[in-house]
Image 1 (cartoon, rainbow, N blue to C red):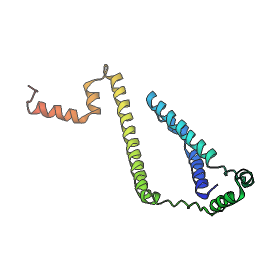
Image 2: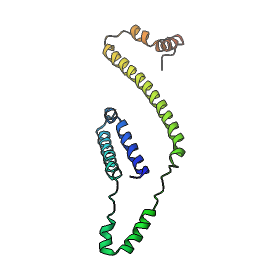
Image 3: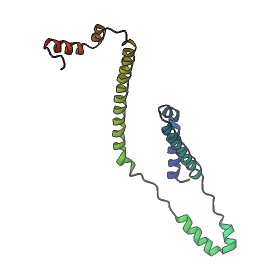
Image 4: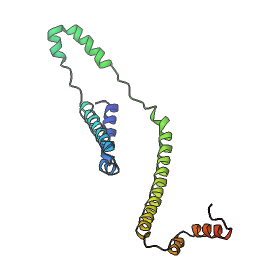
Length: 168
């Protein structure tokens, strides 16, 4: 196997080991997202499998004697000489360095957005809990109890009454 092909297989294998498929699947909320995620995982596994089988095997050696018998040694020797003189160029990755910094900055943005999202989610969960608690108590709650939780409304109503503004 060539060095570049082996490197591709190694990277794909390591990438497949580092993906937390179950963890990501737990974050999905809709059936459509689960189907798409399943399709993505299947496609990834197919590509990874192809890389493992196709690029991890050495090519079978050419049986030059077999061809010498059927074609003739002069022509086969010429092909053999040219075949052995072929040098496969080594793969040089010029794309990754260009996008590595951009990718790293996107990862930083992603982490910041994730953190912001978690904070917003916590705030919304607290707000939902407060609304559910208020919903339970609303039928038996007095105005004083309500205004104790919402002093800004009490101030607004007191100002309206003091200014003789009854909302007409």
